[in-house]
Length: 145
Image (cartoon, rainbow, N blue to C red; front, side):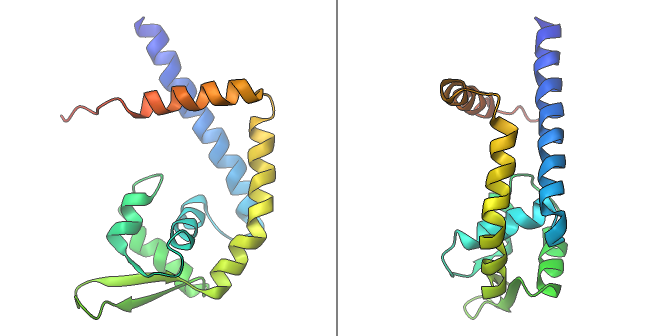
């Protein structure tokens, strides 16, 4: 069983790396990385409400310590804005700009095409089953060292 567990984990890591590589290729023309794209999608989901950096960090697919640097790069591109929170001067609120929303809208069909290509070998029933397995895998409590 140990070898099978190792094969499962290794297979998931390889599949994840392959998926990330394909998504990076799809985002290359927009000069975005997958983490930057993820931040923009998180902010779009806030429906024009500003959120703190900690909210963005919690919702990211890959937890990163350099999220503020990602935000800085997105600000330089005019895709997000940042303001000091009026209620808590130590908190910075982040919001997607109209330019960021427009870029995401342009990328939606490109990403959908990439996702379709990545999952085309699975039947609708296999996709449902795969999602169930992923949810089970992700629900395993993590041990603290």
